[in-house]
Image 1: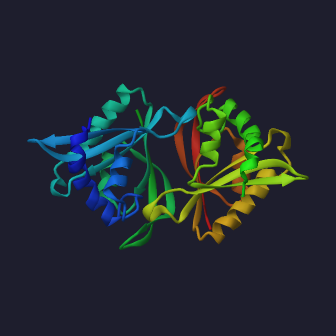
Image 2 (image 1 turned 30 degrees about the vertical axis):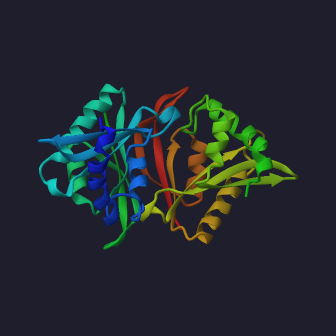
Image 3 (image 1 turned 135 degrees about the horizontal axis):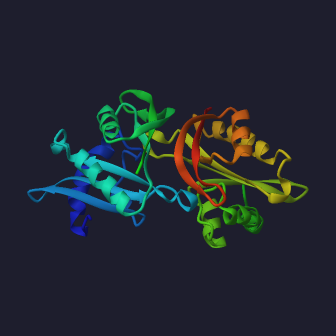
Length: 156
Length: 156
């Protein structure tokens, strides 16, 4: 679990992702305060992954819907810009799948995977997620314009 | 737009839907206060439809995602139990489609239509929505157990 003193490291991971505006549906000018309030919100469990004392990635898990939908969780993953290609996201997702099972969730859903985020799409597919829906032109990418977003799901 | 004095009528429409737990991912024991805070939240525009001074239905519209996803809206519709089968939901959705266009939205997305809610699914299809995804067993129905939920989308 992330500790309060991890906030600075978490923000250093989140900030470039938010500012780029290419993969998350967050306002590009989101402040540090609002970004951390979102990532560490009371509706979420937030984790960090470390190597030699350095935080390389962070993810959150939350219940995706209330009521009759509360057996499905949702997660968001971010890897430090310095640590891409080293399996950090894969390790976090494997942790998340195990943790979700321990929490009794029966499925994990990604509501909005930007279709141009091919590295993420490939990784989620390798980890057993299926693209169960394609939202037509639902994301405005700063470089590519309107592109599709994917809904991905994995039963647990 | 709903006025503060419409709250009692709105709750009388929402309450049986929430208590039934068959169509919305809201906790079945949601209080009046929390239900109204949800339906009339600051992230939403909320409307009512009246006939001879009686409120027969209510819907909300909100931006479905922030950042690069903010050109797609989301709506929720509820019709009074006394007024089903009279075209209230259809009129509300037609109003919503026009209102969404006037707001500059480029699409409308329903994130979670319970597949057993056949009346709603048929109506949305008639109004131009396509089922772009099926969430496997993502809803626990009080009578039918685990059933699929649909993601429906209509470009504007």
